[in-house]
Picture 1 (cartoon, rainbow, N blue to C red):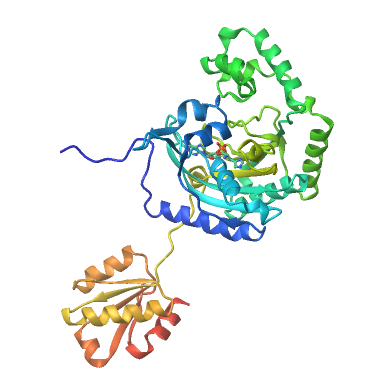
Picture 2: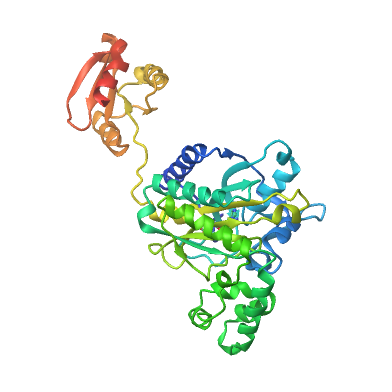
Length: 418
Ligand code: HAM
């Protein structure tokens, strides 16, 4: 029979790696709560049309990276390549806009993109995603970035990261810039552009600006810059965002070539980049998408948000250790098996974490196991201890052990752990 292996680009997460993911999620909950964000859960599967209309027909994601299939009734469904589309669909469908002026929503979960797997790039990956709906204020852009930075700081990461920021203008100023960019790209020697960029320069010229192929990168160095062509309102908005960031002491780097891979952005766009994780440098990205809610058939509500790539953050979080258990309860005799389970249960009720042995083994092999589990205390229970109503408490660090009354076990363990 052929082996049932996982799909290429998908991975299983075991400890200690899974603890890193739990750590990232717990920190996100703690930090985002302080800014009034609420957690939501939405489906991983949506109608294909949602993504085509949100992310853009001509983007790489929609053109070649989606996991799309027909269900049993012939309807086209897609495993979500990102969360913004689904959050907006849910926001509109639940009419949240009629109950809240500003909604701050966050969600975690798997996303799916059929990309070529490499370090920091997988086909199933996980995002921490935040969307803020209902405000056009530049202060909201700044607050979102301050919150994202506070989150990265809470992970102990901000020191190695850079915030890159740009403004992509709006439907007012973009067409003028677009034409200038098209003129510039057409004047280039097309043969020097990569295949993707030759196509992009016709259908989605902005994307040529952030191509990672070195020859394309150098060809666009002198391309017109959107930040030089912003309309007065977009210019004012961008300056206001930057000025709050400066007042808040959050450093940033202007990157006029930052255009992002999704078509819904307007005005502020940003990425958090790291030079320590290989070619895939962005650990987070986002921006403002003011026209999107209306374009999806909802009210004309402005919005902005970001997503962090958890696999990429995990590449930087190499020091996170798995949570240590408090005790291991070793059973030295058949007759102690049930009693041990009940004692362990008492300890867990008192808030301690630990494991109890389901089988009898020698003291030596039980202590070896306690060592492997990295517990601070090993408890040993045999028939002699049961007869005396006692249990042996062994400090795994010092090696000191003593018999204590089972009635005092919680207290004894507490003393040993403190
Ligand atoms: P994105 O830039 O496509 O934006 O993805 C955000 C982050 O997800 C990236 O910076 C990266 O860390 C991670 N990521 C993306 N693709 C992969 C992959 N194949 N493997 C591993 N990690 C990956 C969005 O998805 C937008 N929805 C963000 C947003 C929310 N904008 C507004 N609101």
